[in-house]
Image 1 (cartoon, rainbow, N blue to C red):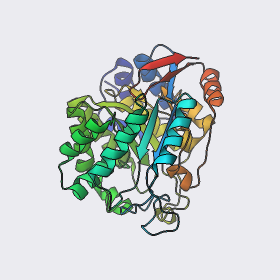
Image 2: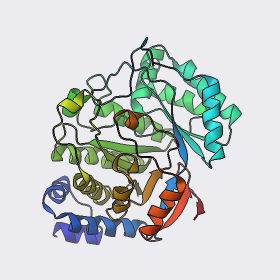
Image 3: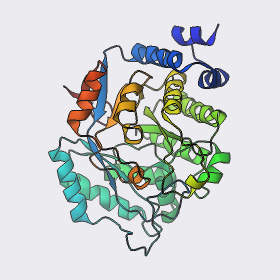
Image 4: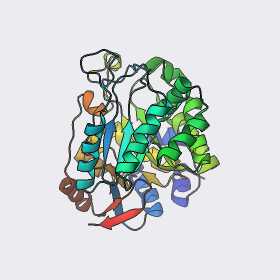
Length: 355
């Protein structure tokens, strides 16, 4: 059976076939195939989004990833650990804007053990019991386990008890160790990242999966990343969504080595192949934060069924010089103009209201 027939028939494609789609098929045909798969999974002609806020509790980080412009060393003049008053104000503002969740992430701070994170979550949940905490990427959880002398499972159990609601897919970048050694040599390896998500799924936590492509990765690396995500989803079914975005090189050490920043066509190609190949992942997000509103709108015809987050605050991508901001009215307009009904959802993809 030809690859295109397999896609249209709903037959699972192989890694070799995904690579062929990524490299050989013309862009519009690829978009049509991905859109077909998207509509088969989501025939209701809706595009979902969530209203939440990224809160970075610290920018102090020992990882020093070469693609990151956000981290600071301890003692730097602009290094910080968030104070409770600032945290409270940020969450109050989120709720006042219709937000249902916060994305809580930070650097790998050498001095913060499990008790800090438990107290942070307890403070949030005691003051704002209604807010969902989507928090702590796999590298953060591994770091907490090392600093605290606990297993990953014990860390997750304690964080869940304190109020953690789900785990974001950050820290994945490209799940190929040869690339990881070059772009983030101190960061969790592929199997460690996967094991955090496997353990979270076992404990009943839903998580997302992400991919940052366009640094030092090849087409084969992109497909290998998709392969390990699909395999873990086959095993656990715990991923709610997949979010690919392109590396933003400005203000980063690694940017000096990356000559050709991934453009709009590359983004749409990777997005479309992701939608086609990840047949067991329900939702694929468009990344307007890195691509801008117009390209994110096009992404809705290239496999994406979700517009991500209103993102009241975002600091990490912004530190790399990309500062797309968007009010709710603009998200609604972009979705409607693409021919869909906008639907606000929560972090776990439960629908809240249509517009």
